Length: 192
Ligand SMILES: O=C(O)CCC(=O)C(=O)O
Ligand SMILES: [Fe+2]
Image 1: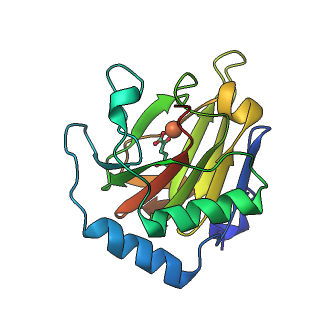
Image 2 (image 1 turned 180 degrees about the horizontal axis):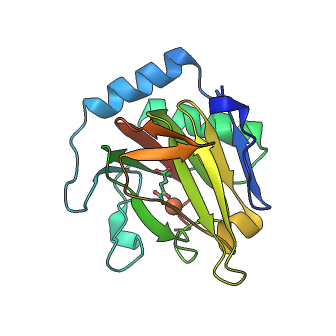
């Protein structure tokens, strides 16, 4: 349920679905992720599945194939694909962990490496994502709730940057809401 019933304010091409994953699926995904090793080379911890992503080169590269997505991730990816009738199957997933105060700077997911659809599943703490449009200077805020899915396509994927400010709290309709640990799983299709 959305905090204080605020409506998500999304750029064209973005779709937000509350409670996309069931409580059981979310718990299983969180348990799975928590049992896997983390990469700690960024300011936040990450896990890569399917294809390793090189943040410096901003690409995957043919040597970067790790293997098929683990079953739990694959079945969630398939559900997203079926729900939105997507033409391609997700073959890559990046897990991001955010402790309070951590975020991700505004970016557009690499267009050369990844296909036009990006799907973000949220677990754990709610947080506010900021969309910014470099051409118009507009910004839009979207509250991401645990178990929600955010699909980025079209303008929202290519014309707007998205990021999460590195804060310990978010302001929602005048209230200051503390963040706790959040996990996101971003599904993409690497064009091999
Ligand atoms: O954690 C999120 O919700 C966003 C992650 C993201 O934008 C990315 O991995 O490219
Ligand atoms: Fe992203």
